[in-house]
Length: 66
Image (cartoon, rainbow, N blue to C red):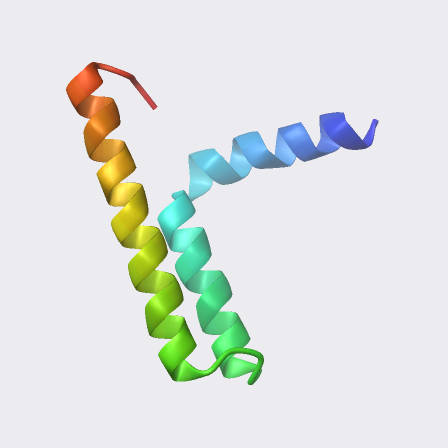
């Protein structure tokens, strides 16, 4: 039951927002609540967004669809 609910939420979150935006919003919220420093926020954002961009580029070159 829990797996079905999580799959449903994942499907709708994927349709509503991109993973990159979700990571950025999470890091921003953690920074605003003093759980993450501003320097860590920059690192988290850069690594994830940069890494995901490379993965998306490779997937497009190989002809995979999202």
